[in-house]
Length: 139
Length: 336
Image (tube, rainbow over all chains, first blue to last red; front, top):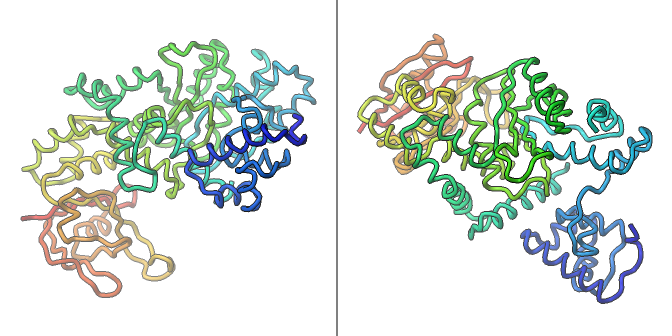
């Protein structure tokens, strides 16, 4: 994704603005975000003021804590359909095209809510393969 | 998901609801749930008004049609096959490839799908699948619950999530349930029905009659909560089961009560049923548990005692109790 590269100052300030805006509109404190993202409070504060850049890994964690994508924090545009690692592994094994892989993800995401007494187990490669087997005739 | 992550996810959703409904109160405020409920109700009040003399099922049906939510019910494996044929094979909705596995998991109440092969104007853009394979008790309640998720939350595909009903600490689900009560038993329709019967004794017989009159598919539990809310004199809805003390469940095993609902006048009556309070043997609720049958009789609330010896004020109340699968349901209404 190229997010390891150090952004230019003006980009860094834009990223900082997006992070601060998202945090504030979601009513989160610096401490709450730093706890979840695993970034020190001081570093996060500097990032929010554009005084410090953030690594790709930490940017991804920040994005997750703020309920957005790393692409959005970087570029300011909403992106959807990033391929989860487990799906990518399944797609590789099944020799799926990118379009098929995206469609599989879209199908899974169309189940938007599940009300249950226990959480659903995580989706591993095998679960993606099972889902593919179920829908392959219409994929 | 660990605690801080789950807490944050809930906060994201509460703030998303606040933004979406343009509610002023902050999620921490005690006004928040009332403002959310009012904002959701505003969106469907014209539908409620237009169906004021209809049953609850018709009102909820009109709301769901308006919002593009189509409900499907699953009672057997045949129903699952039927839905797979309809949505997966015929309409090529890939998400329904998850249906059988999702419903095979224990404790799944409902699934909500957003169709991908239809336009945004499609009348049934969302399909809510209600799992009634093991119990019908949530058949009515699940509908307004899902409708509130549609009303209160921004377009959900932006933020896919899963909801867990057993997480009592889940603030979003509590908020949705609070609001769903307003839709399931709308004040403008259900309160007059209850008021009309308020000269009669508050008993389970009356609750069942109101259920059959307004929402035959609703559970006694949900009707009782709504009825107590609109009752004209102080009233409580309790449930009780045999269990131990709080924090020490192996000790003090007895029939212990939990308040499920009360009305505004009950909350200012000076009667406070403490959490996990022991049901005295003089209460019709205790008789109902002992003999597994229903009882209606007067009782002195002064016989209710806490483990530290405190007693409720000595007031006469009418108690109606029934045993539902080992759980005692009690209606307590103060006699003036």
